[in-house]
Image (cartoon, rainbow, N blue to C red; front, side, top):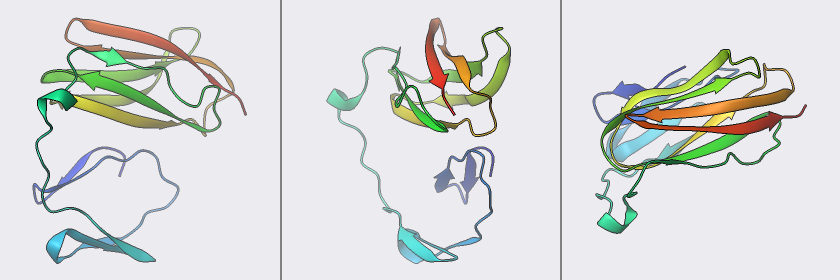
Length: 141
């Protein structure tokens, strides 16, 4: 899978670039069986308490930074919004789109696997409504 996928309107998988495919089966009680093992997914999800919902849009510094080959980017969304997170090279060219989706209020994390990119300085940019934030990240191979 190279993007978010919904199965039976229940399971939401967010995936990046993978080297291999893994066949899996959805079982009863929220279980997922796959070649080589299985895992249990909770069958109910509690609504976040008001204290857990962010009060403003924010994008945080990636970690680790510098990184090789992957890094984590965390961002907050205080209300329903269309969110994009894109990676740009030093020349300002878009080299990857990590997120382009409608989000509900919450805290989010994404992982950028830059395995196929050259070492160097990149920028990541989040947009959500009128909010725009840009930060620098460094890929060192």
